[in-house]
Image (tube, rainbow, N blue to C red):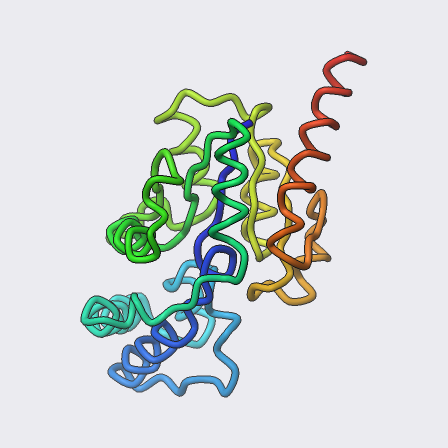
Length: 220
C-alpha cells in the first residue's frame, strides 16, 4: 500500500517555530495575531491570512517576512511526535511505500524530514511551491499520484486535519485521522475512515484499511 503522510501536526508539532514566524509576518502588515493561532497550522497560509483580513498583496508580504524568519531557524523548532519514528519505520518494513504529502512548501519539508532523520523512510517528499502552486492538499496528492504513477485505490492518507480528509476524498482515497495534531473537532466531523489517538495505533489502522480494500476487491 502507498501511504501518503502529512507533516505538520502528524509527523511533527511545528508550533514553536511556525507560530513565532507567523506573528512576525502578520506584524509586518499590521494584522493582529489571534490569541489562539494553532488553527493556522495545516491549511495553506495564504488562505489563513485572507481569512484574517489580509489583502492579496498583504498576504504575500506577510508570507515573505514569515519565510525569512522560518528559514533562519524556525523551521527546525519543532518536536517529533512521540512514537512516529518507530511506527513509520515499522510500516516501511512491512513493505508499504511512504510519501510525505504536505501543504508546506517542499523546499522546507525536505530539510525538516532530514533534520529528524527520516529521509530514508520516505520514497519522496511532496509539498506546495512558494508561488502558491499545489497549495491545497488535493493538488499535492494529485502531484504524488501523477509523479509516481500510483493508483488512488492503492493509497491511504494519514493526517490531522479536515484538509487531509477532504484532499484524500477528492481522489477517492481513505484517510486515517490522527487526533494529536491541530484538526480539533473538525477532524472527526470531516469523516476520516479511522481516528487514532497514539502513533503506535497507526500500524493497526493501516492493516484494517488494507483488509477493507482487499475485502471490497473480493466482493466486486
